[in-house]
Every structure is written in C-alpha cells, then in structure tokens.
Image (cartoon, rainbow, N blue to C red; front, top):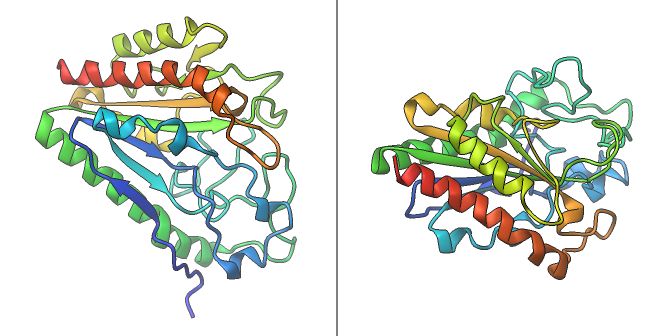
Length: 271
C-alpha cells in the first residue's frame, strides 16, 4: 500500500479569459480518513485554514480571472512551501511543508506518529507537484496568449498570532518578495489602495513578504508579476470556531480587495 492515498483531486481549477491567475493554496480542508485518524482532535478541525476566500473573491469569474484552489488542508501538505522544506523566513518561527503543529503550537500528531521522509515525498508527489504543475502551465498559457501575466496569491490569517508576530497584524498585508516579484510601480499602487482603505490598515512587505509561490513565479523581467495578499480574518469572518463568514463585515472590505485585483489586471493589460 502507498504511504499516502487520497480520493480527492489535488486542486480545483477554472480557466479565465484575461491575463490573471488567482491562486488559493490554503483554503483546502480535506484530510484523508486514514490520516485524520492520526490527527489530534484539534488538528481535525483544521483551524489554520484560509476560510471562505472563494466566497470573498466571488468577483474573480466576473473579472475573467483563472482560479486555482487547493483542496487538501495545509496540514496534509503546504503547497506554499518549498519542496525541500527550507524556511522562507530564516531565524523566524514558521510551519513547514508537512506541519507537525498548529499555529498555536499544539501537536497535529501524537508524538510517535509523525510523517517520515518517504511519506512526505508521497504527499508531495500526490498533491504539491500537481498543484504547481497546473500553476506553471496556466501562467505559461497566459503569457503566451497575452504577452504578460499576473499571479495573485490569496491568503488570510488570524489577526492575533503571538507565535508569528507581536500585537495585531495589519489588515491588508501585501507581499512582493521585497520588490522582486512584481513591478515596483504596481506594488506602490497596490500599497496606496491598501493604506487608503477607510477602516483598515495596510502594509507592503511587512511581516509577510510572500510565500514560496510568490517568490518562485514572480519574474517581472519576463512579464510575470506576482503579489501575495495576506488578510486578517477579522476583516471578513469569525476568527474562532465555527469560523463563520460574516457577510456584512466582508461586504466592507471586498471592494478594496477587488480594487487591488483590478489594478493588477489593468497594469498587465496595459503592458
């Protein structure tokens, strides 16, 4: 028997008509039953999910964007981490390719049942590689069809997480790998939208500078511009169980998110 089996496809994908791919690597909640049986009770709740982002970005189809959505929980494998599990923020505490604890540092597994190298490799082959193959294929298609392409990596996180940052996180955290993943003029325009959004705080390349996807695929010199947005979940949902979407709260921030996405589209289509 394989070290890892799943009946769930590794991603959902909708192809659009304009030069933008929206990636959602952390919205997945699926955990195969055999693996869930090894999880602690808390881990089976998959609390560190980027909940409801497909609903928040429900304007994506209207804009003609392609959308790529991970199906499996980041606890199974994190498709926004390097395949060799190198730390994206050297010297800082992070979770890995196949995490062993939650954001609150509670165990995902019993101490004697952690995944080994062969199991991690099997998960990488089953989920990580197909996601990235699809991502690369779509970016290449967009670039060939339009001469340029944009990648928007959509994320959310609890607004207060002492493990990773002090105090409360700004609401709209834009990451461009310290300027390496997209045109600097575009980054400044996005920063302006985020910081001028009434009732919200925004920052460019603060605590979150972009994960593996943004850093790996953003290449302005080749006409591919990648941006990560890490939003506070308090901006649109309930941050604790049962993690409900709050439509009235979300309706206030969604126009600002859409403006940023439209700015990216406008930029690449004008190239």
